[in-house]
Each structure stands twice: as structure tokens, then as C-alpha cells.
Image 1 (cartoon, helix red, strand yellow):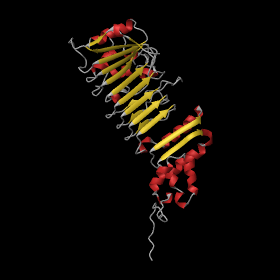
Image 2 (image 1 turned 180 degrees about the horizontal axis):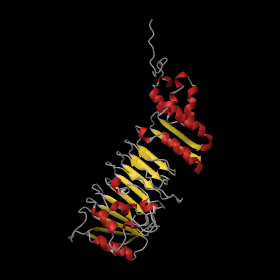
Image 3 (image 1 turned 45 degrees about the vertical axis):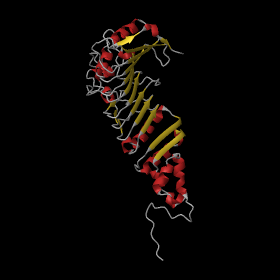
Image 4 (image 1 turned 180 degrees about the vertical axis):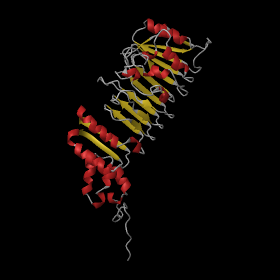
Amino acid sequence: MRLAKRGKGEPPPASGDVPTIESLPDGLLQHILGFMDARQAVRTCVLARRWRHLWQSATSLRFLGLKLAKVRAFMEHLLLLRTGSPLDTFELWFDAFRDSDGPRVNLWVRTCDFSSCESLEHLDIVKCLLPCVRNISSKTLKFLSIRNCRFNQDQRIRTIIYAPSLVSLRLDDHRCVDEYFYRAPVLDSMPLLQNAFFRLIHGTADSCTRADSGNCGHDDCNSCYGVEDDNRSVLLEGLSEAENLSLIAESKTFIFKRDLKQCPTFSKLKTLLLNDYWCVAPDFHELNSILKHSPVLERLTLHLFSKGPKHKLRIRGSWNPAEISAAISDHLKIVEVKCEVINNGVVKLLKFISTFNIRFSLDEVEILEQ
């Protein structure tokens, strides 16, 4: 009788016809371990010799419901012993977190570099300090959400987001209550982008108390002159391939206005939502500029002089075929304005939009439910 050798990583033959977990290949077992909390996955090393090192190559790494102080040493040893094994999922949830823990967690995230996550498609970062994250880079990432986070602590440096396969992007600091001066990230080319939401309403280094243009004339202003090569497009160029786009900012934020000086063409944009930041009388320059560069825009929504989402009034306008004018877009058929009250500023805006073959009727103003 001749016995064949079992290859490395090859499961032992199952006894009888009943399949067992031992009959599964290593790759499948590593995938299964990825659904477990990392501490539980490591404990499987005592099951048998075959299991001794399987956890080191688990395809996902999860720490759920932690008190960070209890797992610091464990986490650092774990990342060291994994020796850079690729990840499909990396998930951290803490029950308690202090500002002093930030540098340590940032180091962990840098060790799990997103560019080495060869199958990464979804990335959701919530309420995190990202002062040492210079780049978010992934060729496979499709869905990215960064909410209530604070970027690079060095006001002279911007974080670069490189995700050429991205189809959905959400950057939102709506609930970021701390005053923390950071630069908005640079958005690299995103040719497959479909949906994008960008809200920047808290104090950042891209705002200036002296001027809202980004050029206050004071050489010592770190906001206006604090970043090298700041003539490049920061946000709008990266968002220019989106099909559906929402842009919300405060009046003192100048980064969008700076980008508009070299405004890209939004060649695929069909629906657009803007707040009153873009609707400044008398010439409505910002609104006019972005509309001129949106040749296939079909629907425009404006949120004016109210915080929302509980606006009080809605005014709808539609394309008027009876009039002929130099319309910015031949496709623009619907404009919706939400506001608190119809004041002089709203009336001026409606008159401006009416020049694009859009007809409004104040007799049909809708009162929204509160």
C-alpha cells in the first residue's frame, strides 16, 4: 500500500460521507473566521495544529464593542503577526474613546493601508480623527462615506482621495461640533461617479473672516495662502463626472468659489441640489457658473435660507415651451425651491431662474408638513 502525502493547506480527508469543518479548504475557513470578532478568531488556534495560523490570514478583521484600553497590546500584536495579509473588511467599533487614543488608532489604520485591500468596495468612516491620513487610496472602492470626521491636522496639507472606481461618495461634517481647522480633501478623478453628496458647514482652514473669495490680501493668512499649489481644483474637478450631485456649504467657506475660477464641465450631471451659499444676489455668480457648465442638467433643487430638512415652503417651477431664451441647458425642465419664507432674496432668485425658460407661479406655493 502506498500513502499519498497531503499538500500544505490541503484539508485532511473526511471520514465517511459526512462532511465536517475539517474537510473545508483553508481559504474558506479564513473567510469564515473573518465574520468573527478578532479575539474569538485568534482563540481558534488551540483547536488543532492546522488551525494554529489560519487566523493570521482571516479575510476580515473586526473589533466590536470594545473598550480600547483593554485591547491595545492585543491589537498591535495582531497587526504585526498578520504580516500584511490582504483584507476584505476592516471594522472597528469602540464603546469608549478618548482624544488621547487618536494617535494609536490612526497608526492601526495606517497599518491596514486601504491600497492593500484588493477587494475593498465599501468604506464607511464615522466620527474619526484623521490627522495622519495623508491619502485614502483604493482602485476597487465603489462606495465611500466619511461623516463627522476631521482631516489632516496640518493646515498646510490636504488629504488626497484617490478612488477611480467610486460610484457613490458622501462627505459630510453636519454633526461635527468641535471647532477644528482642517483642509478639505483633494478629490482625484472619479470617472464612474454616479451619486455625490458634499456638505461642509463647520469651521475649516478653507474659510477666512476677512474675505470669502480665498484671496484676502494678507500674506500672513494661513487660510488663503497656507497651502502650496492651491491653484489646483480641490473638489469640483473630482465631482465633475457625477450624475446626481448635492453641494452644501456656509458663506464663509471659500473653497468652492476658488474652484469655480477654473470650473470643470459637469458633462453627465442630471440632478443638482444646492443651498443658499450658491445663490448670492445680485448676479448669482456661483449659481450661474455651475449651471453654465452643466449642459445636460434636468432637475435643480435649491434650499434657501433655512437649515432643513424641515423646510416650510416649496415652490416648483417648470419649463415654459412658449418662451425662447438663451437657456443654459436645453434639458432643464424642473426647478424646486425650498425655503422658510418668500422674502426679497427668494423673489430675486426666482426672477433670475426665470430667464432660463422656467416659469414659477406663487399661487401654487406648497406648505410643507412639519
